[in-house]
Amino acid sequence: MKIRITQTEFDLIREVLNKDYSYFNSEKINESEVILSFDDIDKALKFDELIKDKLVYQGFDINYDPNQFGRMCESVIDKMHEILK
Image 1 (cartoon, rainbow, N blue to C red):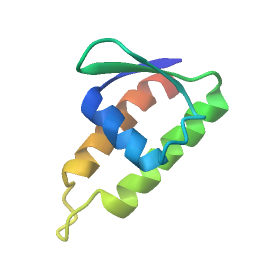
Image 2 (cartoon, rainbow, N blue to C red):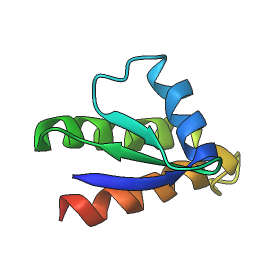
Image 3 (cartoon, one colour):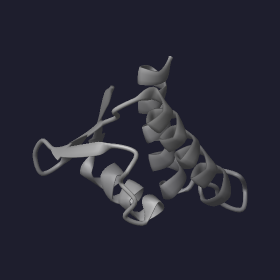
């Protein structure tokens, strides 16, 4: 299972995971894109859940509108949805 994300999204993920990359393998395609590969469904589901938790706790402003962090989380969640459905 693989998803293609932007380098900015990957930077966000690295920040969220605090250097714990045990969920996936990453491969830089070019200066602006990275592919994340998940070895099994359990790792993909745990990663997806982690990103969703971060969205809930950090992804909204005072008016409950998504902030920049939240929009990037939503983008990654949408990409994960495509491989998890």
